[in-house]
Amino acid sequence: MFFLQPSDLDAILLSFKVACTATLLATPLGIGVAYLLVHTRIPGKTLIEGLVNLPLVLPPVVIGYLLLVLFGRHGWIGAWLIRFDIQIIFTLTGAIIASAVVGFPLLVRSIRLGMESVDTSAQRAARTLGASAWDAFCTITLPLSGRAIFAGMTLMFARSLGEFGATIILAGNIPGVTQTIPLAIYEYTSSPGGDRMALSLCLVSILLSFVVLLASGAASKSLVRK
Amino acid sequence: MRLDVSVRKKQGAFQFDADFSLTGRRIGLFGPSGSGKSTLMHLLSGLLKPDSGHIALDGTVLFDTTAGINLPPEKRRVGVVFQHAHLFPHMSVRRNLLYGWRRTPEQERHIQPEAIIETLNLAHLLDRGVNLLSGGERQRVALARTVLTCPRLILMDEPLTGLDEEFKLQIIHYLNKVFSNFAIPLLFISHSLLEMRLMTEQVLVVEEGRVSREMATEELAQSAWAANRQGYVNILRLGRPEPQGDLWVYRWGDVRLVLTDEGGSEENIVELDAREILLFKRHPEATSARNLLPCTVRKIFTVGNRVRVELQCGSQQLVAQVVPESMRELELSEGAEVVAVIKASAFRRLG
Image (cartoon, rainbow over all chains, first blue to last red; front, side, top):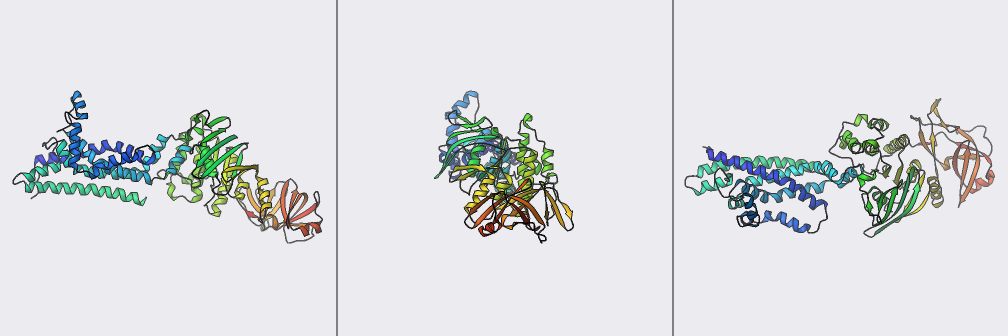
């Protein structure tokens, strides 16, 4: 039969916390990067694009290791943060950062496609009606790419729910602290007699991902219809 | 309005060059497509930056390379009505209308939304989404939206192109109403001579990336008549009609004209082909035509086998086209008295 341990509920809750926080934090940045890529002519655009898309093709373990090098006690950022008594590795923050980095390319891709499909003439009309560039962006371009932004957010959320490789390296596998659903499943499968419990968590995982993908699909479908 | 422009702009292989200064209320920008009309519009509104030069509107410098001035579009107070309206698809008609008005400084808001909504007959559309509007309705909303920013100048980029004939007439009617009610200077861009004559008093002719000539719109119509085989079309602004039997009598200055078409509003614009006017030396006793106007010949102008006869009928002027042979038989000369005979069905309603 299908039942969940209290520690499984912790893992589910934690997964939600990580995925939500990572998505919400990454969205403004994703919109900013997508805007840079679509509407500006900055030098090194290809480089930025490559950098943003890199996590999509790199093994998550590699990303996790690079983040560990960066945020570790002797890493560039980690050594600086330690002065303010902030630790990233083996904490919830670490899990969030790992998820955010891995899911970011999916978010930017979707927002970018949406922004490219918005006709710039409406924005130009807004300028002649007295709106500054920033005002026109907020009142015209942003609402018109709203569905693409939502689609990107759901995609990233789904990706974050399933994030494993980068998280286990940067944040470890500490029950109640950084153990999300995939990490809990990993632990069950590597301990004897944990098959059934692993399976029930798998079911939860499938259910969650399915719901999120359905929402994303609905959002992008209405985007096409527009 | 006074507009001083001296700008240069290179776009790929296309070189645009304009040097002109003009004063007037209704100015046309006339030229074939690809001549640079739209480029000039974008340069004036600030959507495109000239390579060099200066632009000043009523003494305010909008752009000047030597002084390093380039006002952004939102600071120029130059309104634009685009060819395809460019309404905001995610907003209702009401929010579209108020978008610019809300962004106009309070001391500049001398036009109230209620006034323009009434003039353009938009009240019943206010709560609709803009995606379900017809072409004519979209242009009306776009025009009202721009008028509400109370601009110093409105640029209209071929607003009638792509509209059905019926909508075109309706829009011309509304345009005339708006520009006489709200007294906003207009720069009207079109490649249609008829539209130019309906909307403007003065034209700048744009050819191959430069402003080549500046003249009165009527002058342009006459030179176009001389240059090609097309007929000349008289444009008449008539008053409110009164029924006379099964026909309609319109006041045209101090002349009364009989037409077959009924018109509704205070001002009715009709066109009359110059070839539809018959000239008689003396008043014919009986004729099937309903309009017999005693006229004086003002001017005669011959091109090939076509003669253009300019007539003075009371306070109004009319142009008739005849062949040289008739001119000789009628002994037409400047100052001669003739009777112009026009059928009631020869007039065509424009707006």
